[in-house]
Image (cartoon, rainbow, N blue to C red):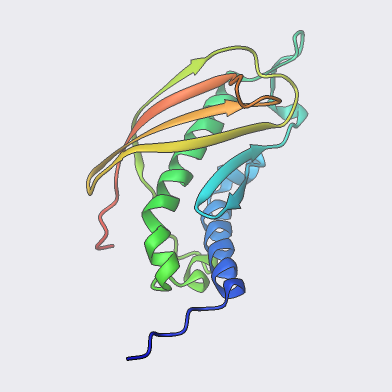
Length: 169
């Protein structure tokens, strides 16, 4: 019995990129902050390019705590959504055209989110990665770390709990 021929890698990459782009650009606040995501396989790195509007204390200058918290929460929600949708994206059951037309899946809802500010965020690009520590049908836990120049020296981290959307729609 012949095994079905695998899809070309370009098709799979295009489907992944289209799904991620639709997921990220479908949320206006993510666009306002300028957050983008760099995808390598199933791993996402959030990037918040520096802009003057992100400064909270111009005397230091330091990133605003609210911008930092929003960056971490966005990273957690998109990372969690990405892990939730991964199988559907890979099998092709999630149509990227539906996503690009605004038919976004429901995103997880924040139950609680605790941010630890470890040091001042400098006026530079910031990066973050989320690690899903638990993901069930109704509830998920995520840990996020943000850094700037050196990943081993995070300037903020957060832990959050999220209510997962029903898979029925």
